[in-house]
Length: 379
Image 1 (cartoon, one colour):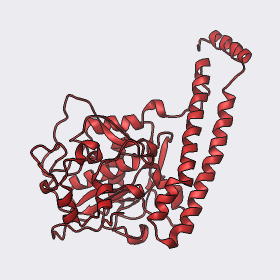
Image 2 (cartoon, one colour; image 1 turned 90 degrees about the vertical axis):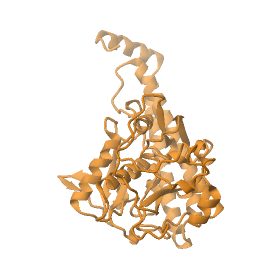
Image 3 (cartoon, rainbow, N blue to C red; image 1 turned 30 degrees about the vertical axis):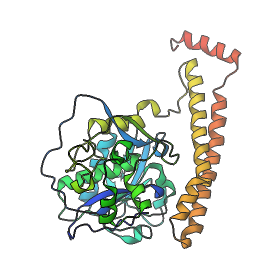
Image 4 (cartoon, helix red, strand yellow; image 1 turned 30 degrees about the horizontal axis):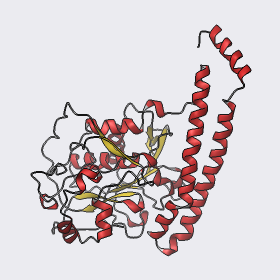
């Protein structure tokens, strides 16, 4: 696991670059440099169509609401962060719920587990895991936050000197991770462009740490189940700026970009649409057509199958990964949490299968229903 406290090139007010530690399901930032963000992001291209690099395995694709709470930070900054984050889900069948009775929801020690995304706006090591740098920017990726041991699953330790551009860039980037977005530079196209020896030396990375943070995430990775559709998106908010020395040849490197962006690219929006389209939202209303019953049964069965895989991963691969990267003292709590999650999945699987059976009607019932619906003009 990357220790996110890398201080690069002696800049005491270094801006952060985002580094993904794959084994922990967390996208984190190592302090690196204060990026100059004066220019506007490049204009969108007309063609070809691009889509983000996303973790389909960890998307909240069946959830209409994600509950967000804040541990700390000024009220005005909390509202700003929540407003910026909401740009990611505009027009999507999913919402960030972070306000109650006009007030931003406050995380507390007694109830923080009920929140899907738990935000810290101040560097606070007590809210993080052992080895985390509280001054780093990071987010647990998608649904991995359900089983993460951290009190804060999304860390945005903004400082007074941070510009509006930095606040926008970091908020969009980290909340996109929280929705299941992966880094553009961890597509296969970029791996061959990095100067691995130079990066390992400058950042003091082991071969394993380099592989986790700079090499591509293959489509065979069951933990993320990554999907990339279309070409590499150089305008994506999920691609961060690099130093030129990190590449073998910046003249030919398509993944090299020197400045951060502050708005979502067309590719970002297309990738989020892939994860969160209207078609993926579950409606519990009875379908108004006979064909709707079959579709509903298939949808419920599909969700049960997905949860079955989740339960298997919780009892196997996910458990092994988390235990290998956590201190021994935390193993008992991790195991208890994972077992609780797996059992909850088992219960939900049974409920979904029972509900699916209700939509598998006998032929005679289907015939009567079809006739009745036709009379009412619904079929």
